[in-house]
Amino acid sequence: MFIVWNSDIRDFPTGSSAGADSNSRTPRKVLLPHRGNPFCDLDCRTAFVNPAFTAVFGYQREDVLGRHIPFVPSWDVEKSEAELSELLSGKRVPARETRRLSSSGEEIDIAVSVSLLP
Image (cartoon, rainbow, N blue to C red; front, top):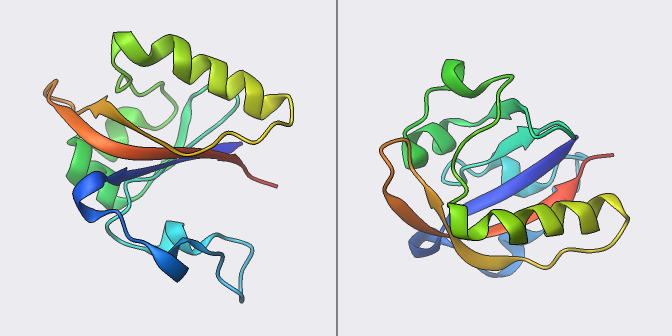
């Protein structure tokens, strides 16, 4: 299982909010309501999305659970797939700024980071 951290660039927090919650193995990022976070399995099928994800991207929870979310623009598919391969081979994948597509096709500027869950 891996998680994709998506943050609308306009709302991207800095400082200590990026750390882990000391009372939980769940990164604090998941608990912040303005983060649009999908959790996906290794086949990129969605296992969980938080309310911020549905609010930012416009996809309904029922429409994406168990499915691939079609929100990576065609021009970014190759890079995103390469990053997933690096992650699965044990390498660290740095966060980056990019764009993702809303359910209506609108491009949204985001910061994206991927991590494997233990």
